[in-house]
Image 1 (tube, rainbow, N blue to C red):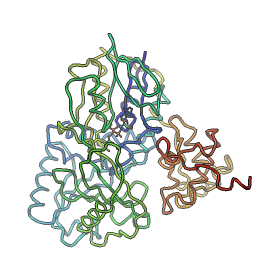
Image 2 (image 1 turned 60 degrees about the vertical axis):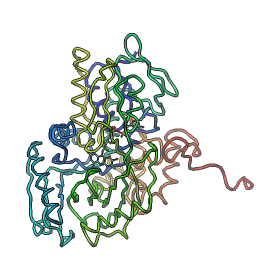
Image 3 (image 1 turned 180 degrees about the vertical axis):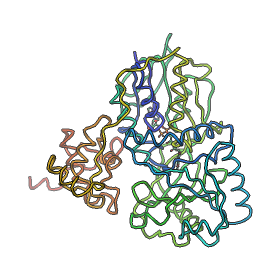
Image 4 (image 1 turned 45 degrees about the vertical axis):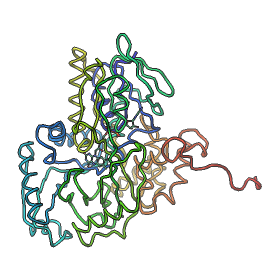
Length: 480
Ligand SMILES: Cc1cc2nc3c(=O)[nH]c(=O)nc-3n(C[C@H](O)[C@H](O)[C@H](O)COP(=O)(O)OP(=O)(O)OC[C@H]3O[C@@H](n4cnc5c(N)ncnc54)[C@H](O)[C@@H]3O)c2cc1C
């Protein structure tokens, strides 16, 4: 019997798994997908919000303000790139400036440090590409950017290094209460466990309703994005938001941690919890709104688009705690934005809940908080590159020309705990395919490397989620 079963390997489930792996517990992390971080945690704005936005007194405000300062340490331990670049909420008229003053007040109540309201000229001094019509802005220096899927992957890897078992391709289909604990039934296995922690993103309502009568509803709220080429990655140097509305924080323009430019997201409530298609009408709207922030936003440099689904929950706030009518079943549900920013503090809080309901946890002697460093070949000096190639020649073979990713890096990220098994899994861990050609050149090479390292045939390698086969058969059968 497991002590703890965590359902959902997004940033929340992976963070909780990593924090619980400090203790003498038998833990399993389950996900229905074939990789970790395949839900909202791979498709969001990637912002570590300062914490002024959420209404004081809510879980969102509490965990965002506690979570933001925790990122420097966790990212250092896990070798995840993180940069506090600061953010603006810009205003164009008196009504916006009133909203900005309100955000400032909220920020002060939420204990956010360094907030300032500045005038339009100062904004343009700091961000010369922003519009002449900006009247003023709220500046928040503690806002940061990172790669949310890299963080999630790093957390899962570190959790696995510390003994957590990760079972992918396991969709929880039912949960039954036992005399003591629960039986979790997936499409592949049955698991007995003392405690369950549900971190199932947009499906967290469905999981809750398997064991609790205290129902809540999660509606997916889709947000779509443009990713622009690195040649325009420095169009802005801070995260630039417009004033938030009732459905979200509005369209932003931001550099990404890998040096691209990101525009989006819009907000649209939908029914299908798996629908992550992008649509030209929504993208047109994003273009128009982004142009209000910066007339010359270089939209001709788009290299790709994507969308993600926020968990819009009927209670309006993060639901974190043991279900009243299901002892030992803990919901971590409705984790919409600022869920990424709140994730370290949520994980710490959930560990405390587990400590309370188990009457204490015993720390391991050998917990290792650090992840084995990843090689970022393009960031090394010429001497470091030469040294590395001498030791391991595969670092001398460039596979992705756009991003200068070497074979050595790809082999390394496949052969780790929670390592890549799909082309997009490799892309999220080491970036081949994220550049201008979007994998046109390196895709087939990545397939070959995956097949070789995983000891599979090339036609078994998938692009991303289950059954997304790339090769379906030989075209020149007659010539064999
Ligand atoms: C458009 C958008 C923009 C956002 N921007 C930001 C931002 O800039 N900053 C910020 O702080 N937050 C942001 N967020 C919020 C942030 O992305 C989420 O709060 C966070 O990713 C939630 O993580 P999670 O682990 O709860 O969910 P997910 O990452 O969705 O993980 C849930 C996991 O559960 C698995 N699962 C579901 N059902 C089952 C089942 N039956 N069996 C097994 N596994 C199952 C899924 O496969 C998935 O992997 C944004 C969200 C969106 C969508």
